[in-house]
Amino acid sequence: DHHSIKPWQRLNHYPEAVRITRKDYLARNLKRMKGAYGSALYEFSPVAFIMPNDYVKFIAEYSKERQSVGRRPSYWICKPVDLSRGRGILIFQDIKDLVYDCTVIVQKYISNPLLISGYKLDLRLYVCVTSFCPLTIYTYEEGLVRFATEKFDLGSLDNVYAHLTNTSINKYGASYKKYKEGIGCGCKWTFSKFRSYLRIFGVDDLLLWQKINNIVILTLLAVTPLPVASNCFELFGFDILIDDKFKPWLLEVNYNPALCLDCSIDDTVKRRLLHDIVELLN
Image (cartoon, rainbow, N blue to C red; front, side):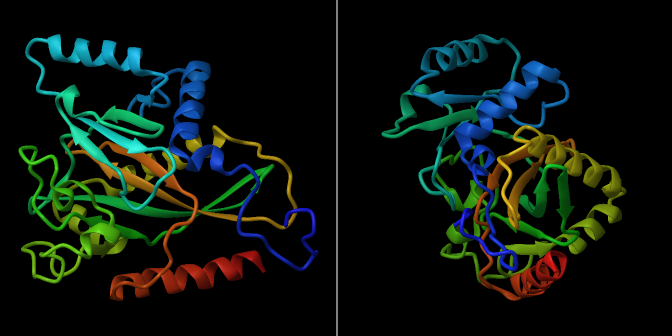
């Protein structure tokens, strides 16, 4: 496809963009950047252990955490490296519960997420890259705030509706269509609504967005430049979690962010997004 593209055509993927969209490749590239430029710059992603290769390293870290006196308990999350939509994710505290039958990454679970009315949330940020050389990034100003549909509870780590924010999971939950105090029906807000919410409580939303944009830039720099390919662009879905200290964390980067319309919030955000991408490419 890349070799046969005509001058008036556009391809919606770059060759080798999988370097940041597959979880193990992303972890390796961020680790390399930490080594080159210092861990302080790239501290927005929890250390990842790629299993089974990093099993001994993980055991050492796990044991160190268990033996630390005075620390609150550590929780871990295990994700298959090449699955999406929350499939195959396991959250655990005891290593005896770690079971996997494919290549996975294990990371420290962020157990102090920002909650709204007791519900966990994350941000789906849409990022369009029109060139990797020179690196040219457009971050869409609107986006999706995705909520879990049951209240966050570290006592029930196997409850996907309390710990995962993927719409593909929560839309099948018993509470999805119910009115949830502080959240409403469904499981989504727009960025605009979320930023208004933050301002009510005196949070500097401009500073938060600056930190998030820095995460986007530093992540994309980890794979720049990709092989030169004409007339390509890439729409990435960056998943960002904010903890209760208002620090943003990179969860993953999506290769094919869902553009289907599951609710009116989707309709508001995604139709304009698609329109603006077409305008951008023209």
